[in-house]
Length: 108
Image (tube, rainbow, N blue to C red):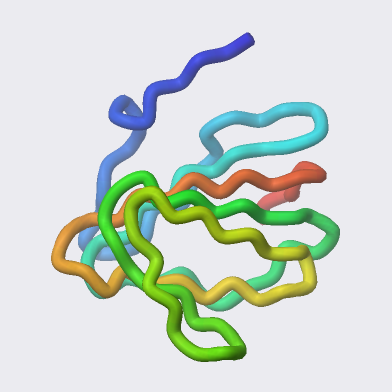
């Protein structure tokens, strides 16, 4: 068993987004992502891994095939591994996300 506290992890970097491992399990992993205002993740897919993306704080938007979807604190999005993730912080404050991946996604 392991407990982590998000507030004790790395903060925001106004020069670039922050994405780092938070918990590594045998079958799954969790990454913490911090986007400063105006920052976005590069569009990408997760191969064989399903992704559940939860907004802890702040707000932004997801670009989907149907258009732009507001994505704020308390929201949860689900992506199959073959679906492209496009997320950006469209708000005026930092945006913290937790990315739950299963099976475990190997980062580069």
